[in-house]
Image (tube, rainbow, N blue to C red):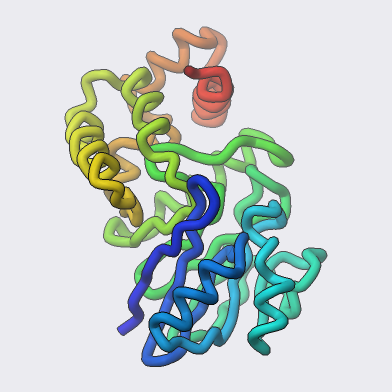
Length: 250
């Protein structure tokens, strides 16, 4: 049985730690010292690292980790300190578990996600009630990537790397003010944050019920998107209108 924990870093990032026995895998270590502290406190040996994309808050801990541990680092090719480049369709066998590698461009062109242990490690592609900005990719790429996630089993845990949930829920409410699942989620997630608790992980089922970017085929979402841009027809255009709206939403 793999245990999954979130180690908070910076203002709103998480490093995900998967552990089985005395061995652990870390996902997106943007800062090494909190991870090293967690590993020592729990008497864990770092057996490997998974990297989703090249942004500094996901990789800056790697040089220090290299000085403490001799571990393989799996991730997109071309990233410094990634020792084992991986790509779409590969399967990694870690902690006696298979992790499937998905190429999910949109936020960045090199973005990868990892699916295993009934969990999705999606970096900055999918967030709780939201999705990442389109820094390098386009709307079609991001929409396609999100649809791949939506096709995963409903119980799959969504382990993204930022605590953006309440801000995302505020936008989702502007899109679907009458969505009962969304209203209930706002109440429960707000209560968690008031106790300084994480809203993560989410689940694919929860995202499909309340995340507007996974609901581009819903009449309520289509109507809201067309209020922003009347010239939207396809699901990708609906998604693009939502993402542009969110970029300027306060």
